[in-house]
Image: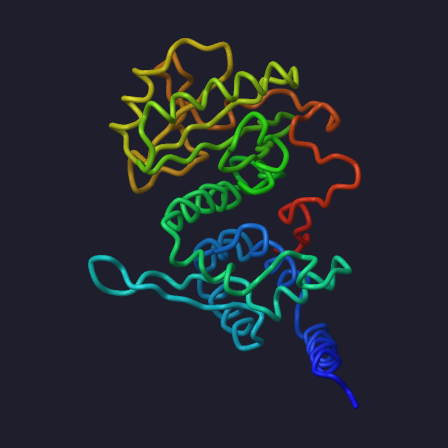
Amino acid sequence: MPTDATRSRNRTTDLLGILATRLTERDRWLLRMLHEHKVFTTAHVADLAFAGNTDTADHRLLILHRLDVLQKIRPLRPGGGSAPCHWLLNTAGAEVVAAERGLSLKELGWRRDRATAVMLSAKLSHLLGVNCFFACLAARPEQGHLSEWWPEARCAATWKKFVQSDGYGRWNTGDRSLDFFLEYDNGTETLTRVIAKIDSYMRLAQATGISTPALFYFTSPRREANFRRGCPPVGLPILTASTRTDLSEPADAIWARLGSDDRRPLADFAKPSRHPQGDVGSPAPGVEPSAWTTRPRER
């Protein structure tokens, strides 16, 4: 007589068989992205996978929700009304990600309660801000190409001894590239603590021999100005920007190095591309590639 565990495995096998006939390569990539980056809004998904078309993105996301691979949550706004739809991985979607890696859900380290808890986390707005930053970069192919994107957890696993960055990315334009760390600031930490992060990036540069720029992105122009006034002169490239208008985006001419008031687009700070083995963010041999780099050609 089959045990409960056997019946559960059989149901999972049957479900994966059905999903194998219903999920596109882009769908499976989106599941990997949600496993790594936790939560996206419809606008994020549109920028990342549907060339900015929110109607097409919403249509496909609803299909994935009906297939039970995604959770759909629309939280209330503090001042009333509903926020945009937020999309998270569901159990069936996590089973797909685990199956691709030849793992069980337990080995993958995924639990539905933990995945859903992000919606009640005090860090939700910060996480959405970080994901929005990278999604906006991905949506600007005319200005450059986002060829790498690591989330906070991957950064911590790689560089926790030195820094705890909100993200790591690589922005390519022509034959030039800019590797960077992101510090996304929405005012939840004291400026003294934010300024102290520069020392951590200095120590990392000294340990690796690679001076990777750190981008400090502020949601308040006044806070950015105070940060710049409080920073001592440093030898590491530190760039700052803030959301100065509703129309400005991370790729635009909003970035200035410490010690200069000249605002320039992100692409202006790119340098001739290095050999991949020389990049601080190149995965070590045998390490799983980031979800971003596994995206299908069809977007």
